[in-house]
Amino acid sequence: MYGLKQIERQWKKRLHEVLSKLGFIHAFADDCLYIKHENRKITLLVLVYVDDMAAVSPNGYQIILFKNILSEDFEITDLSELKFMLGILVTHNHANRLIYLNQFVYIHQVLTCFGMQDTSPVSTLLAVKHNLTLSNSPQTEAEKQTYRDYANGIHYLFLVGSLLFATQTRPNIQFVVSLVAQFGGNPGVAHLEAAKRILRYLKGTVNFNLILGHRSRDIFDLVGWTDSSWTQDQDNHRSTSGFIFDIAESSISWSSKKQATVATSSVEAEYIASSNATKEAIWLCTLLTELNFPPTTATIIHADNQGYIALANNPVAHSRCYAGIENFFKMAI
Image (tube, rainbow, N blue to C red; front, side, top):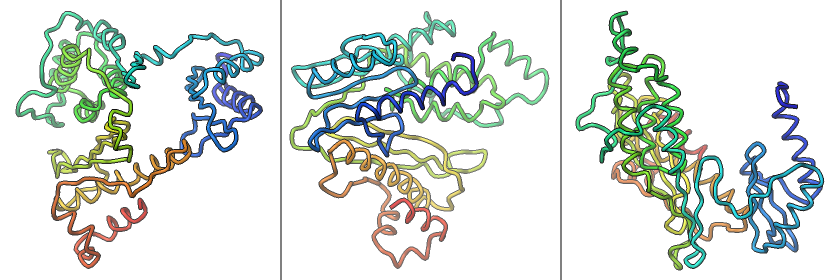
């Protein structure tokens, strides 16, 4: 089947048929998640990425049984306990019920790929008072040749794509990677220097882990934080939105991206950022409900702009904001 245009669709269709036959239900919130219930309790979760799978169950026998049955329809390779998947190293701390996610191997592969395995690490992601704009992009043929000489064969978009993959376990680099990704159409020397600096930072923090687990026995509710930088972009004056969500003091979802419209005040920028975070919170609540962990209280999303908080709490003040933004927020909640 490899090489056919419809391979992805046919494989997905076939796998769905087999899992459905085994009693799995396709999750509504995540197209790659399959759930199996017995007596209204979840007995098995299967997460699928193309032809890679990770199975989770409170009963190890269920996983063994699932592998044996699945092997009747497909040729599978049993890798035992999940330790490495999609470039992510998974370390289990059974005593403290924690999971550590690390991309140590992947980062070293990327450093080697771009010839930066021997570079000196840095402690910050961006240079002080950085000024990355479209004015740094080459305009003349001489400037383009200067960039090609500096790049020395490095494909800018390939480098940015490699960095984006590293954001799966590194929320702290999300903003700066999104920043350098904006100049993929016509990158300049300054843009490539900034992208290389991210690699140097990753080299110095290669042992950082994303920790998942119930570290707090008293807190299990979904909590979010949101913020925005008003008109930070010097090229089109659009603001940047960001959010992060935690469960039991473990970060599970984050984002940093430029807003689609120009906000005329910091209040509007915060309003748009919070509406994006609200939509993410709705999706996360839907996913948690499917996993038999429905939220027990309203999801709290923290913001730090007093004007926005007053606007959200006082319906009378909504007339001061654009109707489009108000409708955008209402759609999210």
